[in-house]
Image (cartoon, rainbow, N blue to C red; front, side, top):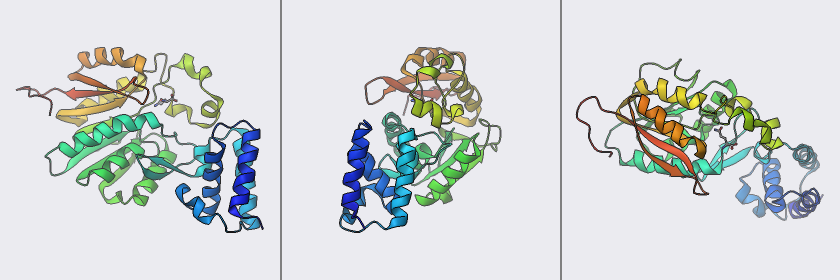
Length: 293
Ligand code: GLN
């Protein structure tokens, strides 16, 4: 039987031959998946032998990778904000750029004086945004929602794995339609925001394997963003905030939209390339307007 190290070396060579850009990393992620260990621990198994059933499994997922299945689905586990999340086909793959604004949201949430902080993650997908916040803010109560049953299921699983299941509820819901009358301090959302005409220019890994409904949002890509703001407003406390991801080119339209609602556009948050990838928008207070906390 070959050792883990030998198998890893073979995989790196094969992945290189097929022009994958990060062969060493991908080989480690595929091995972690068959060994059922965290990717960072693969090297600890270097000298162990890989038994035939695991080799067969590895061969199967390697073949899928060659067909173009995203590595995130094959790895089975994906990190977001330094936390391990499960991921499966049918659910949107979390992007690194999202971490930039989630970090700001966590800092804000930790500054709130409320005993119980109520947070919504609208369009939660695998649950990474809301669950990371719940993990790092221990008095946070989370309502996650998604229109996809697979996403809701996976979010529940992830909340359980990360130990925040007692402080989270996940609803199968078209926007807020299935919500009880609850008021949030913060509504977080990475809704679909890709413009229809941009669909064909996305990479095949995205187009063929990720759920279209998690990405596409009408002609300008603004359909869901508009609904999140319009329908979410009545679920926010006065002075409550939206943290909303969008395409950098959509910022102005979102600013205009906020002006037409009872909302105040506060600021944008840059992604890892410095582009305006998210916006912070506040629900106005009906009487004395007070400063942004
Ligand atoms: N940033 C994602 C992409 O470019 C889109 C995310 C979304 O629609 N929520 O693929």
